[in-house]
Structure formats: structure tokens, C-alpha cells
Length: 236
Image 1 (cartoon, rainbow, N blue to C red):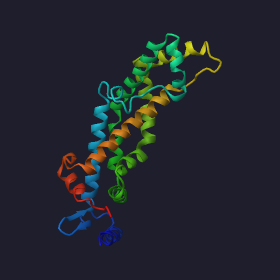
Image 2 (image 1 turned 90 degrees about the vertical axis):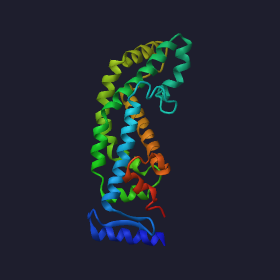
Image 3 (image 1 turned 30 degrees about the horizontal axis):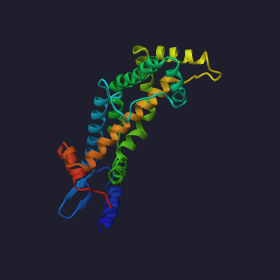
Image 4 (image 1 turned 30 degrees about the vertical axis):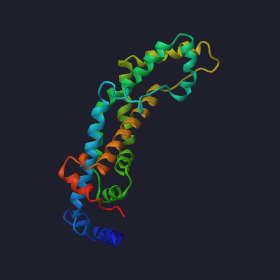
């Protein structure tokens, strides 16, 4: 019966277009959810998730203090790390790792507006897909619509941050020393690597926030979040 109601609701969307007062999901005893409420609620969920994640990760040790998203040496460099430590470059390795994470923390301060622009552009069709999607549907929407812009905006910030925290110098010192004794020199684009890992960490934490809002009533901190996610609309 619930699936039939959902199909009828979707048919109503086609007829009603963007009418913000047209009920899109309803359930006996639970009330109805109109287009405007659905979109507003999902925008709010993304705003809460993005704001919370960017603020948290932009703090000191936001990346470095997080065991899951801490930025380590690139895979090709990890193979060399033991050798570098064995030849007395352990402190330089540690400084390089710390400085990469500091750059990611610094860059996280400047991405809020890109997220918000994408969130504001959400359509009713986007909202239906997100509401009926899995635990990370909203995060996947944000990743799909912002990654290119974020990469373009984040990269110069990361490059500047890498220079500010001396990561470029540590990296140069580290691999200049290694390359003098190696037949296969390392030439990794540090800025691109840190940018990619920083964005991955951001989306990881936004995804955690989305899961909380979907599954934990205490995480629904506004009335619209309680209405949109409290009744599990769209789950069939």
C-alpha cells in the first residue's frame, strides 16, 4: 500500500510541477509532506552536515587528530617511508605528514560558500532521489555537484597552505635526500594529493552527519528536520 502511495505522489509531482504546497508524500496518521517542506528539510540537513564538518575539520588537529581521515604519505611514498626512517629522516617524515594535515585543516575554512551554493540549487527531483535514497544519498548529491568546484577552489588554498606550513620544503628535503640514493626518483604532485585527501575527509564527515540525521532523532535539531526525517517518507 505504501509503494502505491509513493507512485501516486510521484505522479502528482509531474502534474503539480514546482507547486511548493502540493503534498508529495503522505501517510495515514503521520500527516503530509509538501514539495517546499521536503526541499527545505533536505537543504537544512545538508547545511547542518556541511557546516558541522567544515568547522570541525578546520580546527587544529581536525585532520591530524582523526585516525580515519589523517593524511599519510601517498602510497608510492609509503613504500619508502621505512627506508627514509632507517637512514635518519624520521623527523622530516613526521614533519611532512603533520604539515600536510595542517594544510588540509587550513583549506577547510574556505569551502562553505561552495557547499551552500550547491545546496541552494537543489531541485524537487533531486530531493525525491535523496529522500528515497540510502544513508549517504544527500552526501552523494553534494559530492556530485561540488567536487569539480571544490577541487578548483581548494587546490590554490592547499598549495598556499603547504607553503605556509613548510610542507613543500619538508617534501623537497625528504625526497631530494631519497632521490640521491635511489635509482627510481619520486616525483609526487603533493598539492593534488593533499587536495584529494582533504576533500575525501570532508565528505566522509558530511556522510556521518547525514547518517546521524537519518537514524538518530536527537540529531534532528530543527522542526523541518524532524518532520522530513521523522516519518521515513519515501522509504518503501
